[in-house]
Image (cartoon, rainbow, N blue to C red; front, side, top):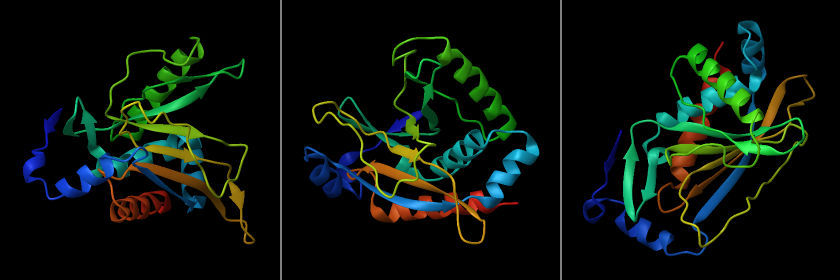
Length: 209
């Protein structure tokens, strides 16, 4: 479900109109997330680590109003729920876009992920289904531990979906795991404060035993 935001009375009206006029309204940050507890938790319950951190990311997203707002047909809408749209790598090394429906229950979400990933692997091309705008665009580069990240973008294509990327797990001097993470957002909808709240909440979720 979604509802239209009354822009005229929105406390971020001026912020939105200012940044939405930019050719490139997106900004991004890159950070390291500690994931030692999360890695072992995923293994202990028989869920892939990628599915586990994707679920925790969507939990944090759905708790954060700023990450649930989109621009649709020149209107601002707030969705009640956001899903995941990660890229899925096929055997021939092409990839397709997916949409994994969010569920607060990790077991249900993992089942959704398994079915959707299997479906995409049997398709060709990029766009394998109709996609909604209440998603987060996810990429995973498990081969690279990056310290910055940028995205291919068309400045003429209307876009307001946040974009998040996970990289390669690395070990620190004490053998603790961490993973690089980047998040890019439309500044007309999301500010640095919102990104900070989101990243800190995600780290808390990954730290859970």
